Image (cartoon, rainbow, N blue to C red):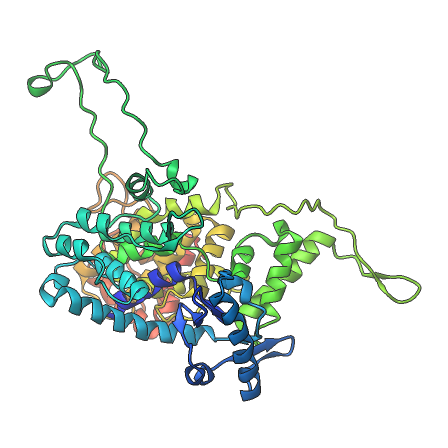
Length: 545
């Protein structure tokens, strides 16, 4: 069991469970919080590190506050047992107790490891070791939701024979009955598990269509899935679509048009694809990812409600506060506030129309954010496969810090290699603010910085520099028709940096070839100037920072 697999599974389960930081009674009246964490006995409930968040900041809850929360939840739980069947979100105001986000992640990590080990034990080590990481993620998620794989006998049979399509078909589960006596399903959870088992993008047409086709006869199939049902086959043409017909098997005149094969990615590539399209962790983040000038009043209240519940000097809270201030300046202008004769503030009038309809996040080039994130998949997935999820995430964090600089379009990130909620927000906010190209440039510089953290050999440095900078700077492997701009950029940056950090610096010849001399200079300056300065120098030479 690797840390990367645990992280990927944790992200998958968080997307399916949608963690809540407040306690609530589930459908059976049992007290729950976090990502479905059961704390139905008083002892386990009172042991939780509950917090109280109010206008004065965040503090640990007292024993009396925990007890009051427990009593309030017991009453709410009794109503659930009697058939109230209210959604978890309706209990947010039952008690002010809140579970820290770090505690939710820590407990979820422990549970992921426990359920993964249990799932492995149920299917057997031999069969488990033959599974893809995506299949292990899906099985762990099912075990997490059900507590075992006992009711999935057919799926386990398909697993033993390596039949991925059969596994995906048998991996669905329901959670009771709807009022009309139809099965109650978590459609999106099943689609994500279906996709993980098959190793495809959960937002792809293939994933949506797979679930839609499987349940096409269920009358409560959501319209979002029904619209992906395959249309009836069109009549085959009687004339060839081109003027020339091939010989041999296609001599009848029909030309077989092969669909282009969709690229397949490894576990880390698939992991970043899931992260690109997952919703942001908090409602305030979904608002703040947009330009403050297009927020509605309700969206502004969502952001204000979030940062007022945080501790003082919380970096994300400070950022959201600044964004809200920017929103009000753009909405109501910068004129001084006015007051009536009694000293009461007169509500300012907006300087732009406020129609109350939320807008989608849009990039400077006019693309919608979701469309832009999909456009980045084929660039990012191979890079994450090449570097590994943790290393590539650290490179992305470093690159985002480089391109955002002091302007603070997004919060400064910890460069810890964990694609958590703040990194997810910062990445998507940076895409919305700068565009995909700028973020890809930052990522390239972050990868280059990682390259400078250990000594390189000439062939290794040449190949990796090409792999990092080449795709963004028009260079082709081995030269080809285009100039090796990736190597020229490297040499130019080293010359700029060398004159400042090496007294005996001899300028490199700008020949576009990364050989022993360029590699020696790279290793020397990475040590004397530091990897960050080296990456920054390349960025400045290219005009990226």
